[in-house]
Image (cartoon, rainbow, N blue to C red; front, side, top):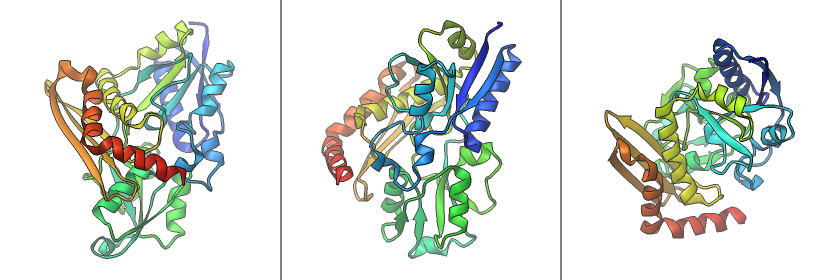
Length: 305
């Protein structure tokens, strides 16, 4: 165990919290570690909506390159930011036990706008589409940056509220008192889960990290990401998915929206545990056959405009 495992991370407060969390778990198992922070393109380009940048994995690409170049051994990510297809040579080594999967609305202390007109901020197509589906007379504006930056932008604006992942705010103790749970909003695939990736040919790091894997979270996130991968084919789209274990069954909810939120195609399935491997794929196929293929074509055309 003489090798020091170099943990690559983005340098935002949340990303560093995630890296330190993994570091502590590895240290507790007797491994030596070092944290190396890298700035990602997604953090540097704050004036463009994510989907305009044209690549999935804008937050993970810099760390992928650092791993391939041998600057870091493993990388820790919010799993919802990770493309469904990993670069050649990089593998998923562990998924940590999942935290809160909910989206929340952080507001200014007054929720009257929910019954009238309002302006909500989010950088996510999925959140935008679901918000407009429920509140078609509201205005949705783009919001980028790490969670600290986004909370500050909300404070400094005349917006009524902004949508955040509960897990991110909870991890760094930034969850304000003025929020409501959006339990009607289907989260991003793998929301609330952290993933550790390693080089496929690095047996030492892969075996070390595999001790941190949570099998239930691994199964649920696999289903959700398989659903996403089958639908999107490498394109950003308003897609939500959530799989949960309930006793010896898995309950899965998946949804695809048009960007303006007017069209919604959803699916809900309950299957025995042993049928998990094809659940995401089968659910996505049903959506594609039920109008989803046409809707995905429209989304791709809209995003190119």
